[in-house]
Amino acid sequence: MPFIQKTIKFTAFAVATVVGILLLYMLLARVLSSITVNKNQVNTTDITIYLSTNGMHTDFVLPIQSEFIDWSKEIEFSATKGQATNYNYVAIGWGDKGFFLDVEDWSSVKPSIALNAAFGLGSTAMHTTFLRNAIEDNEFKKVLISKEQYQKLIRFIQQSFKRNEQGEIIQIVTDKVYGQNDAFYVANGSYSFIYTCNSWANEGLKKAGMKACLWTPFQEGIFRKY
Image (cartoon, rainbow, N blue to C red; front, top):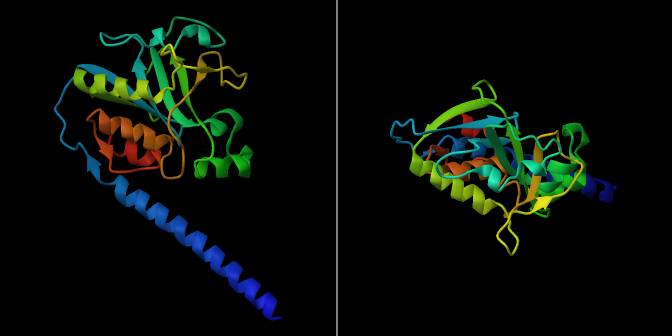
């Protein structure tokens, strides 16, 4: 009996600890994401970009060509299955490689993938998707930024790609792409429950001098700013 009682107490304590940590995490996410960094913005119409979400993950949606960069020179159309070139925008996101390649939906998440991602044990990847149009709706938020902000955002994104000795981004050759117009690349950085795909997007906003959360692991914090 004493052993059973100790086991029950230990189990109850462990469960209570996990629940407490999760509640604290959610509370901090809510509080810190409500604090706005770079709150004061100058009205500008220089560059139009979009922030996109699938409900969980944030991407930057950028014009392929501008006076500052032609994204198709680095993120080549030929890297996609379809290899079509008649696109005007590219969506760029960062995240855990295991989630990107091995999780079709939340019902297929394996404990090993979730644990590796949560505790920074996996590797990371960039996911790029070419788009013909970008229209503001519930999933696409239009954002007008200055030329200076866009140049800073470009630098942040470029630095997120891991590169070979020639300075070229490194494609992840896989048949697990999502369609005819996307590709994966090796990324810098480590994913964890502290620094998620949305934290990466939020960092990009910060470094570009755009409105951002003090910290957020979720996309909701970002989209409350825009």
